[in-house]
Image (cartoon, rainbow, N blue to C red):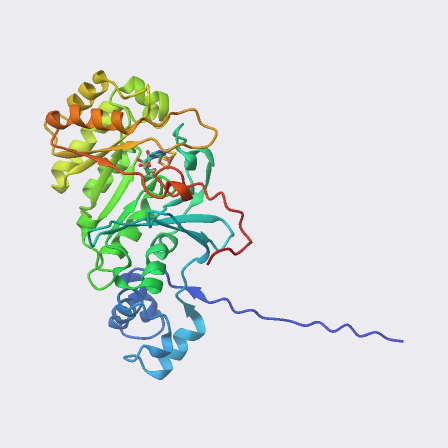
Length: 363
Ligand code: SAH
Ligand code: SF4
C-alpha cells in the first residue's frame, strides 16, 4: 500500500517591531511604503507621545494604510515577568527579552514630592567588572538595543500613564557608555519634542569613567546630565575596586569631565560609595575635595549596599554623616543618598536578575 506523505507548510509571519525606530526611520519607512514623508511624523506621535499601539485606531491614516501597517508591523515592549515592591515603595520590574535574557528596571517614588525616578538598564550584565557590584559579578551578556532601552520607559507609561516617572537615570544594569550608539539613540527618543518629551535636565547617564565616550557625549549636543561613578579619589585606590581605572586613568578622566561640564554647561554629579575602612577617612575627604576643586559639581554619597559573597562592608549611618559633614564645606554640593529597595535587591549595584526565568510570579 502506498503511503502518502503530506507536507504541511506553515508560513509564520513575524511582524517587525517598530519600538526604537526614530522619527527619521519612520519617515523613511513611510516613503518606502509609497506614502508621504510627514506620515512618519504622525506615526511617531501616535507611538511615543500618545502611546497608541493599535494601528486601526490611528484616525488620521486611511483605512488602507492602517491595514498595511497592521499586517507588517507591531510596537511591542519586552514581556514583564515579575514585579516586586519594597516596603519603601520602590518597585522592581523584571523583563524577559526576546532571546529569554533577563533585564531589570527600578521605579523609585520620592515621598513628599512629585518626583519619581526610573532607573533603567542599558546592557544585560556588565563587562566592566567593578569588584563591589552585583551586576559586574554576573558578567556581560549583551548590549540592549535602543528599543529595549526605551521599551522600559514605554512599558511604564503604557501601564501606569504619563506621570509614572518624571526623571530617568541610566543606573540599572550595564555601562551605558559601552553601548554608546544604542544609548544615544534611546536618549534621542526620550527627549524628542513630539515623542516622549522628557527634559534633558531629567535624563542622566551614569558611567564608570569611559573617558573617550564622555568626550563624544559632550560633543554630541545632547546636553543631558552626567554622573560619574568615582568611589575613590586617587588613582591607586580606584584601581583596587574598578579595573576600568587601569585603562582610563583618573587624571585624564577628570580632564574629560571638566570638558563635559564646560561644553554642556551642566553640573556633573559624582557618585562616591563609602566602603567601611577603605575610602572613609579624613585623607579621603581631602583627596576628594582636591580632585573636584574649581568644578561646578555635586557629590552624592552612597552607603555600600551589601552584595552576597563580596567582602566589602557597609558603613554606619554615623560614618556617612561624619564624612558628609567634613566634605560639605570643601565642595559645592554634597548629598547623602538613601538606599532604596534594599529588601528586594533593587538598590544601586544589586541588580543581577537572580530570579529564574520561565516562571511567572506576582505580576
Ligand atoms: N555602570 C554605570 C551605571 C550602573 S551602576 C556606573 O557604574 O556608573 C549605578 C551605580 O551604582 C554606580 O554608581 C555604581 O558604582 C553603584 N553601585 C554598584 N554596586 C553598588 C553597591 N553594591 N552599593 C552601592 N552602590 C553600588
Ligand atoms: Fe558595571 Fe557600573 Fe557595576 Fe561597574 S558599577 S560593574 S560599570 S554596572
